[in-house]
Image (cartoon, rainbow, N blue to C red):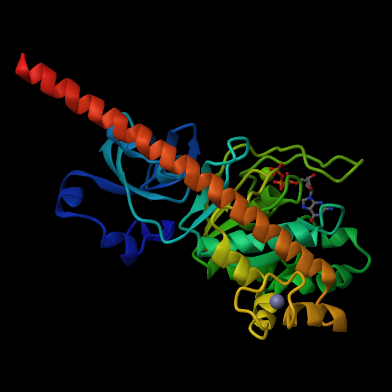
Amino acid sequence: MHSLDGLGWSPFFEQQLTEDDRARFAPARVVWEAREHYRLSTGEAEWEGRLAGRLRHRAASRGDLPAVGDWVVAALRPAERTATIQRRLDRRSAFMRGAAGRSTDEQVVAANVDTVLLVTSCNRDFNVRRMERYLALTWESGASPIIVLNKADLSAEPEAWRTEMSIVSQGVPIVMVSALRGDGMTELAALIRASGTTALLGSSGVGKSTLTNALAGEERQGVLPIRDADDRGQHRTTARQLFCLEGGGVLIDTPGMRELQLLDADAGLGQAFADVESLAVDCRFRDCAHTSEPGCAVLRAVETGSLAAERLESFRRLLREEEFLRARHDGSARAERSRKAKQIAKAVELHDKLRRR
Ligand SMILES: Nc1nc2c(ncn2[C@@H]2O[C@H](COP(=O)(O)OP(=O)(O)OP(=O)(O)O)[C@@H](O)[C@H]2O)c(=O)[nH]1
Ligand SMILES: [Mg+2]
Ligand SMILES: [Zn+2]
């Protein structure tokens, strides 16, 4: 067995290696990242990683740079346990969101993820509208979602939470667990062993790191109590981190997200709202916005009670948001491209000037 296999290496990545890569560099996976400081794993060892300068200059956006879960080729210096990242390999999937603060920039939360565990808990964190957002972004990422309802021990009727969630889950599996008491954890562990790379996503305090520790069978991540006043977490985890599990499977623990902006989530929204989309097939107009159009099958379904009005409202709100952010993102991407083009033109001019001397 190859030392990279336990990390999730596969033919998809292998085929991207050139002769030159094989001769001079080694493939490695990003297991930790903070402000362009990286930790890489080659299976048998970990390395402090830095970006080769030209990689940063060529990146059109932050999303192009390596993120946790990415595969890279790197020049290894065994004496120092350091590595220079030469190139990022193409991704199989990437969970992206609009970056907090700079709302037109994109942020890769986790790359090359097969399964996303969307974690919430049986308390005041529970919010089906937020779950719709997570589901749309997960479908868009190329990974498959699983909804995890943690802290089942806090509820006298855990099944009631599942029933409520099933309105928005659209067939996505819902797993009920208690990371603290152990309920459902054997099933979840089996699921993860068979799921390649799994990322844990959800608000602060829902128990992502507690789940990580339970699945790893040892304390790898710190945890903090939630606030009594509103069940919110205290943002204990501050960096994304990848772990290999003993019995197989790879886990990525992430910090709780405050904002979750929809960036390029058009197809993901369609999948997250498959119920609305399948009704829309029968609307009289192909471009029906389901607001007041005659012959709208979606509005008819709301009238007859077969589609919840809040669900349609939520779909329309998310669509509007997605369109707005996409337009803004396209605008700033254009500006960035022209800025880069000017930079390059200037460099060429300078180069010519120096040559003519
Ligand atoms: N009752 C109960 N508490 C739990 C369970 N799982 C986690 N907790 C508690 O919830 C609190 C928050 O857990 P964390 O694992 O730190 O949550 P997190 O999602 O990693 O939070 P961030 O790192 O801030 O994003 C801790 O006090 C845990 O002990 C559970 O199944 N039941
Ligand atoms: Mg945590
Ligand atoms: Zn319609």
